[in-house]
Amino acid sequence: MLLPPLLPARSGEAQHQRAARTLREAMQRGELSPGVRLSTRALAQRWGLARATVQDAIDQLAAEGAVDVRPRSGSYVAAHEDAGQMVAGETVPFTEWVPLSNWALRALEGQQAEQRGPAPAIDFRLGQSAGLFPSQMWAESLARRAARSMDEDAGGELLSASALGPLSTRQAIAQWLTRERGADVTPDMVMLTAGTQSALDLLARTYLEPGRTAVIEDPGYPGARRAFGAVGAALMGVPVDQEGLVTAGLPDAASLVYVTPGCQFPTTATLSARRRSALLAWAAHARAFIVEDDYAADFHHAARPPAPLQGQAPSQVVLLGTFSQSLAPALRSGYLVAPASVLDTLSRTRPLTDLHPPTLDALALADFLASGGYARHLRRARVRLAHRHDVLLSALEAAHLRPRPARAGSHLLLGLPDGLDATAVQARAAELGVGVARLSDYLLNADSAQITPALLLAFAHLSPEQLREGAALLGRAVYGRGK
Image (tube, rainbow, N blue to C red; front, side, top):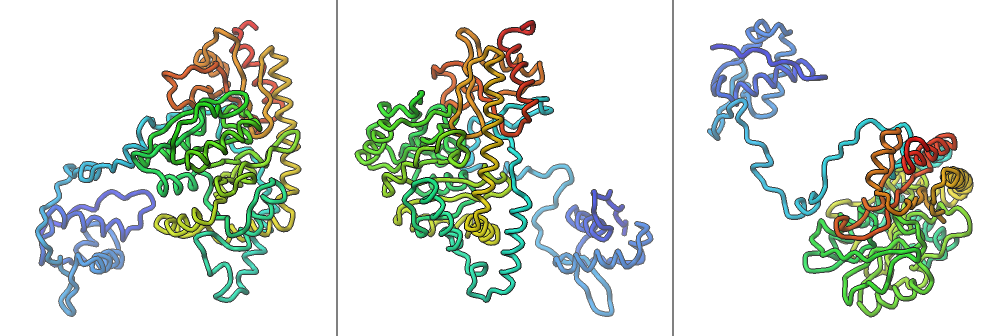
C-alpha cells in the first residue's frame, strides 16, 4: 500500500488535525480503500511524526465513523456508501448547488462590494465611531450586574430570558423615554433590540411582502430601504425639504411609512408641526402605521429636541431608538416601542431568528439608566459634540462655504454653490486627503431625482484641529486649489 504524503499544514493547525485531514482526503480520493489497515508505526515513519500524534488522528477519524477500530487487531478504513469519489480541484462551488433565494437576491440588488482604500487624512464620511463610550462607568455597571447575577436563583432575570428583554431594562427605558423625551410608554410596550437595523428587519419580515408598499423619505436612511426592499415590498420615496417629509406627496395607501422627524436623515431637517399633524392624519386615513426612528434625540445641540410622534399617537406609531450612537456601535443595544397588538406579534415571531437580546448587557443598561450614569454621560457628550459642531460650522463659514446648522446628530449638510457638481467636488477633496459623502448617495433613485448638490460631513469623531483643517481643504476643493 502506498501511503499518502502529509498535506501542507494550515495556519495554526495542530499536527494531529493535519494528519487526520491527510487521511480523510486520501479516503475521499479513493487512495485508501475500505478495509485497509492503518499502521501508526508506518504512518509515523512516513510523515516524521510521533506515533501518539498519528494515534490521535486515527482516534478522531474513528469518532467520525471513517475508521473502524477492531480490538486486538488494529484500525481499518471503514466501509462507506459509494457516493462518487471527489476529484481534487474539481469540486463544484456550493453556490452552484443551491441558488440564492429571492430574499437574498433582493437584499444584494444594487449593492457593490465595499472597496474602500486607505482612510483619508481627514474623513468626514458618515458611519464613523464618535469615540464617546464611557468605558469606566459601563465596566462598573457590567461588573456589578455580573456579580449580582451569581446570587440570583433560577427565577432571576438573568435566567428567565424573554423575547421582549428583561423587565427591569424595559422599565428603565420606559421611564427614560417618558421623562426625557415626552413619549407615552409603559414597560409592556417596550422590546429590546440589537439596534435599529435589527428592528427594521423584524418589522419588514412581519408586516411587508411583495404587493405591499413601504413609504420612505427620499433622501433617507439606506438601512430602511434595504430591509424593506429585501422582503419584496414596493418602495415609494417621498421628498423632503427644510420642513422634513413633504406630506403632500404621500400615497393614498401604504402598509407603513418610515420617518426620522426629529432630525431627518441625512438632511438634518426637523418635521414641522403642521406636517406632523398631516402625517398622523394620513396614517389614520390610510390605515398604515408610522415607523419613527428617533436616532439623534440624545444628541441635540441647542434647545431640547421635539417630542416624538409616538407621544401624540401611541396607537399609530412604532418608535425605534438605539444606544449604539450615544454609547458605542459595538454595544448592539436598542429598543422598539409599539402598541400591544404589534408587540405581541413581534415577540412571537422574533424567536425564529433571535431568541432574546443579550441579557447581561441589558441588565447592565438598566442599572446604567436607573443610576443616572447615562444622563451624566449624555451631558458631557452633548457639550463635546456641540463644541465640535460649532467649530466646524465656523470653519466652513470662514472658508466661504454655506453649511446648514444641525439641531441634533453627528453630521451636518453642506450645500454647494450653484453650478457645482458634488461628484467633482468629492473627487477634488479626495485628492487633498479629505473624505466626504454626497447627499445624492442617499436617494432612492439617484439617476432620476432632482436635488440640490450637497455634501454630508460627520464631525463627532474629529478633533477641533482636524475640523478646521478639513474645512479649509474643502474650501480649496470647492473653489479651486489656489483659493
